[in-house]
Image 1 (cartoon, one colour):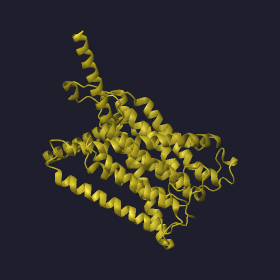
Image 2 (cartoon, one colour):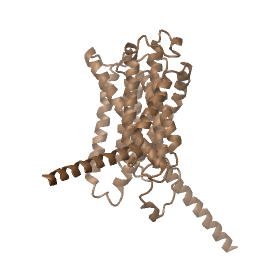
Image 3 (cartoon, rainbow, N blue to C red):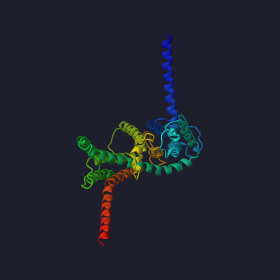
Length: 417
């Protein structure tokens, strides 16, 4: 009996010690790979909070007086669009502070690594305090932040675009490498063919849904030009000097077709070039589009934040013994928080339709002519970046060969003299 009690007490002691150990790891920081998911969850919560303030803030906070709200008409516009900007500003300040305090971190188990990976109770209270402060500042400050957020959101789109194109090119290079080319040939062919089929079906459906009449000239132009761009990136990829295959242009085709679809879906609701449907179906489409939009923001921010290697303009030589060291951080903390700070500006622009004075309907995201043209510009820029990534190595290689030839000719002339 006594042995059983002692065993039970020992088991409880071990459980408590394990719980204490996990608590200390959570508080003080021990796993930066898990910390990034915590930041992603926090960012998703901020997105949902901003949406709730925009769609339901007026109903819930009606009659509540905040500093600066008296400058807006009845407090409605201030609580709707400005509520989103205030939530976004608090999130931006939080990740900016995290960026400033963790940029340049290289070693694990240091003070800055522990601050990045742990101390969540302190950081959550800090974020809540920043959010509350942003709801107590005069209205002019969120308006100024809203104008600056246009630039920050544009930077986020550019960073995200480069990350996506770099990933597609990296995946294509892996599949075409000598190690995997023969083994993955069938899978690559299937994925490439499926990508092109989805692209063509998507283009046909956009013609049917969003260009039902010849008067829808703008939508016809958007869709037709997307088809032209798909043909362009395929032709460049299959050029003999590049020979990138079908996988990369197929995946890029999915990306640009998706951007075209998002651009047309972002057109104002009064636009007549839409297939007529029942109101209930439209409401469900808005809700589904909203959920997909929020998930896309969070996933894009998370995946881009851990992809700092795509933005190293000059690859640094790493010795084998240094490459195998386990005390280096697994990703760039500073870049990670920089992307989240820019993502805070981006989700604010989506929730207000890139117009801080724009009244958005419930369960809508990224709606308005500004949103449409931003999506279209992002699509065209993605094609330019992709083509440049394919063409640049060929151009620089040709220049390098020309310079090498010129140098060899100079050396030969000198020996001849």
